[in-house]
Figure 1 (cartoon, rainbow, N blue to C red):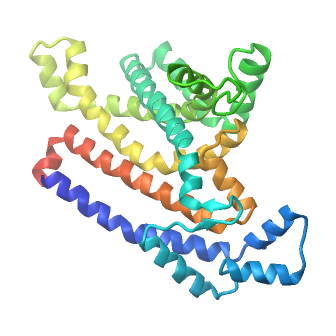
Figure 2 (figure 1 turned 90 degrees about the horizontal axis):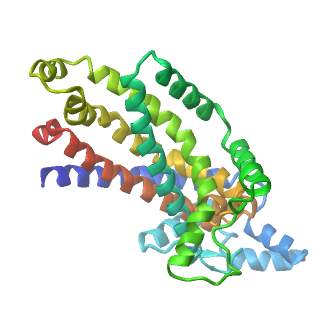
Length: 325
């Protein structure tokens, strides 16, 4: 209960941060040229000054910046994200339509990076300064240095165009009109390349962190004590070393949740995925302020939830957290 109370206090402490992010973004976007009405008139092929004034009055864009910000925060307090003039529907509806693709991409990429990061990091640490360590570290450096958009484009060229094994983009094949298991497998097939593109960059980070953490823990006194008791190396690693070496990995998940959301903007654009990242890009281009602020709000909430889960997992892995609580 003390751990949950501590995590609850951290959740409450994150609310001012969330408000500062939204207010800062709102103010910064006021300096950008054009607004939602300009984007609407461009879509309609133009319009006179009277039409522009009427649209700005209808959407409340004729008010001062302070008044617009006050109206937005009041709506937000009632969990109303506003209305998207570009998409012609509530922002909450627009985000709800795009959120599943981003959540699936993030979950799959994070799972890929975390699992194989642990495995490869452990192998590299157990074979330190030998050829497996050199090979794994070299590939990790290559994946980390490789731009995600370039890797995504090359993956499309190789696996979609040349080999024709996987689709080049999209979330699913809408022409097949599938449901149930067939649709699930089709979505999974479309997510293979985006997951590899986003996950391999974070995999490179995780394996290097896991390798360094394993090497550090292997030199501690309790590991030498476990070996002195006659335990075999596999038992020492699995029962004593691995649990302690996982602590930096778990911390890194919380720190990089926002980074992964940012990376999804590029990946979703390359693979034409209907997710929050691509929606954010479209909102910036079309000056759809309500939708962009809604995306930032939902993304910040997701990061807060991930960090909340990380706090609980960290306390589970490290009994000292419970004692300090």
